[in-house]
Amino acid sequence: MQKVTQYLANNKVVIIANLDGLITEYRQVYQRHINLYKGIDNTIHFEVKDHDQKALDISSYTPKFVAYDENKSLVIEKDGTVLDDTVSKTTTVAETNADDTLEFSSVSGVSIGMEVTGTNILGGTLVKFVDTVNNLVTLNKKSSAVVPLGTSITFRTRTKKGVFTISVAENDLLDIKQQYLSYNIYLVDSANAKTLTYTNAHFDANGIIYVSDKAFPGPSTTYSVTAFDKFGDTWFTEAVDAQPSINGNSALHTAAIYSSDYSGEITIQGTLENQITQNTYWSKVDTVTIANATQPVPINFNGVYNYIRFVADTDPTSKISQILVRN
Image (cartoon, rainbow, N blue to C red; front, side, top):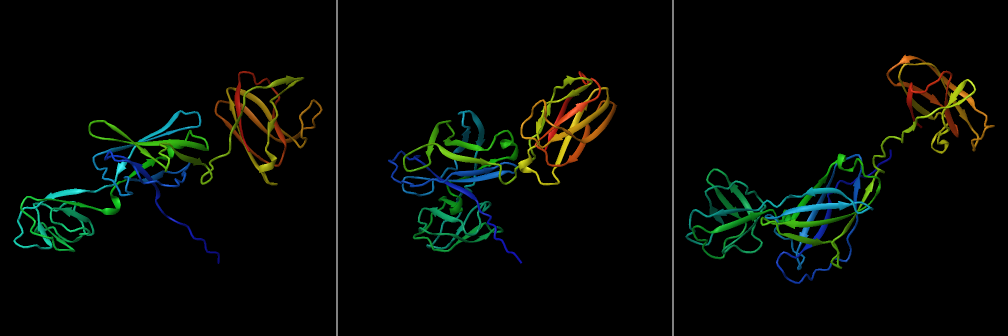
């Protein structure tokens, strides 16, 4: 039995923002490239840190993500979803002694394990229990002193502080070929002021994304034949590369003949010769008979050829608009 391990993990990137106006001291040495895969939805997690390498509160900001292709054209523009679940609650009862239980008018949004901060709350205090009936929150530590009535207490999941996600849908990458993109991220506050974030130790704003089609390569390229040349009593298309290097002995080729009232035979011919000249030897591969068809006529055939072409026995001018070929 063969055993293969696959990994399921968040695509997470750390960026730096100078929201407090201090000199940015934190120097991230390396910023990895982001990989996005065509053919599937992609979600990227970003964590915003300050000059002390501490997660920033970005709950009042809207993260903006923009990406540009190799021609400097904007190809992706997204708003981020902030994961910070910070909630603030005001105590409704004054403690008589330093205690580990606080009472509020509501405990909605508060959950076990959240980090707790506020007046007389010790560092490292976490939510131990939530009583949704009596609106009580029990802490893992007693307060350092009495918590007065009307004190604002903040609760948040520590691992979500400063974190936001960008979702790049499958359709967003549909028209983007496999290539490197550059991206920028900035934060917008309620006054529409913009704050740029940095990706590395040299205060570069640009990050790198690699758009890959390796996970889901998609269908083969379709080639369109639109013209016939007359020779004697027959009409020939150009020679189409049959891509022998990608095909095995049972190689499947498909074609669709777009006809408008054409009547006659279309013969597929193939050759193993490396160069096409007037003396190239062509052999018959298959024939399809069309009788005034107004819908695409499909045909499948197998074999390894260097080139293929299509031959009409009656004039196809204005009656066959195109032939689509896929190897």
